[in-house]
Image 1 (cartoon, rainbow, N blue to C red):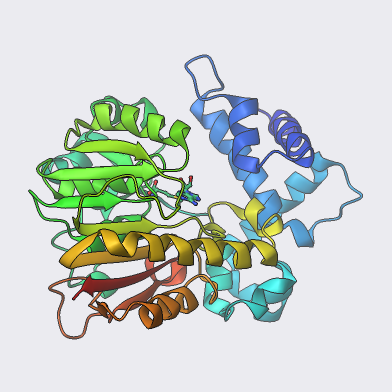
Image 2: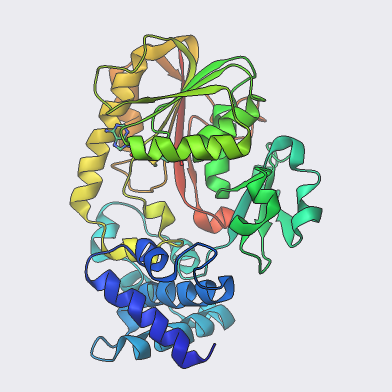
Length: 383
Ligand SMILES: C[S@@+](CC[C@H](N)C(=O)[O-])C[C@H]1O[C@@H](n2cnc3c(N)ncnc32)[C@H](O)[C@@H]1O
């Protein structure tokens, strides 16, 4: 493909974004993901250009054509990749993120640098496939051991750096692995469900974490998956069928005080809706669409979700709160308010059975430390 053809395709996607479509949806709509859609290499190249545009948006000249701006963004990306130090921390703070962010969180220079890198792709092999998958797929490297040392033997996370469209591989169709960010995988390990237990994934969405919990439970016991979106739960069922996951049932739940079941659980995961600041490296368009009002509104939703699930835990049951964001209002503020309102819960270490040096009951997973999404986790046990 010529540069001109690539930039024309990128401009087509960007025009659609300008009508209000999120960048990832615009890419899917324009390029397709079917056998008849564009070739994987073209999809990848156009996605790179579109995401570079939003990553470097405040460096671009808005009067230029979208093609010229996309080309300038790719040049900036190349310059940054060659010499990240040549971009001053102050310039990154002023241009890589919206101005309102500094009132909501500490904006660290290392995090800003990480935001301007292209994200890496993480896979989660099913536990019994972890030994074979790297050889089958090729181009796989295990997660770095440094700060995860207490968990490393349990992780089946691999960083994929090859050229294949993984959704089209036999290994994916056979359910041997999922594409799942490393930070999301760590949420499953914070839950640490045991085979035979009963868990509730209260904001299951399309089931990214449900599938992981089921695998950790060796498909034994029962996993309730709920979400307010029935469409997402339908998608979860398709993914479950591919992954060979059977120990689950779905139930719509809108987050209200009326719970979907009277069951008392060994564990509940609230992977709550959030502003998604932790995903801004992977999804740079969201930097410019997310608003401070979203942060406040979502913090209130998170608080309500936690309050409502609290009664569904058995005595001794484990409650895990996770969000892929880093704002104070949606992380420590929510966790502290829950702890204050629920003395029947005691904080417990985020990773059960971890070494004494391991984190406490609240943990930020930082993108620049993990080379992955940012997440916040808080964990309690019901007394
Ligand atoms: C962060 S996403 C969950 C992602 C999912 N756990 C995964 O790993 O793929 C949050 C989910 O909460 C759901 N949600 C939003 N508001 C809700 C509410 N008030 N009650 C229940 N679910 C809600 C959304 O539909 C969304 O699927």
